[in-house]
Image (cartoon, helix red, strand yellow):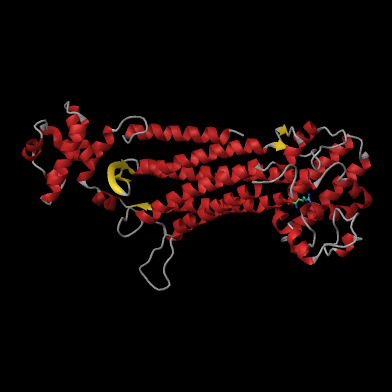
Amino acid sequence: MRSAEGGSGHSLWGGRFDEGLSGEMEALNRSLDVDWRLWRHDIRGSRAWARGLARAGILSEAEASDIDRGLTEVGALLEEQPGPAAFADEDIHTLVERLLTERIGPAGGKLHSGRSRNDQVATDFRLWGKEAIDGLCGQLAVLVEALAARARECAGVVMPGYTHLQQAQPVPVGHWLLSRAWPLVRDIEQLRFVYRECDVLPLGSGAIAGCPFAIDRTQLAADLGFSGVSENSMDAVSDRDWAARLIFCAAMAGVHLSQLAEDLVLFSTTEFGFVRLGDGFTTGSSLMPQKRNPDVAELTRGKSGRLVGNLTAMLTVLKGLPTGYNRDLQEDKEAVFDSVDTLRLVVPAITGAVHAMAVVRPRIREALRAEMLATDLADHLVRRGVPFRESHHIAGALVRMAEESGRELSALTLAEMRSVHPGFGEDVYRIFDPAVSVESRAVRGGTSARAVQTQLDALARALSSASGTA
Ligand code: ARG
């Protein structure tokens, strides 16, 4: 029999073949090294399926309870294993069924009635996916909270805000940190949507045409904790949209983390020196004793590459698949697992780095240039009735005057300012305080202390409502 020759010791489909799989094909065919991590989900799905078959009258109560007991034993055995290396089986489904049949005999062979590995793997994968999404949302929420905690602490420290990486306008450090938290809140919201998409039961779809036995799929869904049941068996066995969207969310989160990481790399340089990363997140050089390398941030930035790569891999696998189930779909899991594993590694590390970093206030203060208040200078005239187009031009001329005379903008005399436009008031010098500039932006979403507090409250609400949605 084919299964005896295949080297895997057991396969689920040998009946119509004379020869076993070639060694090369076996190597290509095998997915156990990847889908090993689904063994708990496979057992859970199989137990529910056996109960469903019993309810449908396909298994006797005795057979169903043998299967249940056998699967418990298989679970205990697999729990002891360090990994799949000891098993030559094709995939996790084949392995579990073989171990079950070895334990309980012929009744084990009845478990697969009306089921295909196509609906089985789709179910296992979704059971795993829901847990993975919960885990990622939890980790991202911890990072958002870390950013918010640091933001609260540094709300009053004013730093240069950048556009084009040129000093633009002053902003509170807290505002910068929160600008890196909001994208992650959106990632959590999107992941919650993917969770709902994933929360639909494919089991009962068979290979493509549904199950011929009177399985109560609603009951099956309830048993397995799914909120819904798929409506089209052909779609159900080939649908990996939730997985692609999960990979997209992971890639998007990876991009957000990479941007935060880039800020930390830049701001921890000698030239900026705005932050000092904690010792626990910094590495030294084997050659240069003075080095404090921001590896935590560089690795975060670097890991985003594979997250984007996985998305490309997944969409490319899906593109061009003909109707029904296709074996290409076996490639889905490696990409999803890798994206989830990567974030599981990166998010706690960058969270730790955010907690441990010191904000170096004197360096930040030193970096603030009065030129950053040129917009406030223009706004001073706007408040006094000058059209902004004109006041922008006037402030530009004053910046130039200061630059040419080698002084800071705030060092210009009132007479010099009035020589460009008579509208300047004596109180103009008040604008040359970055804290005043920050306070003047009191609109919602702005930089004033109250606006930032409102923002912090909104963030906490958004986070708890995103985390609360199942
Ligand atoms: N091992 C496969 C997977 O990981 C499931 C097997 C489906 N195989 C098949 N020939 N229909 O997706």
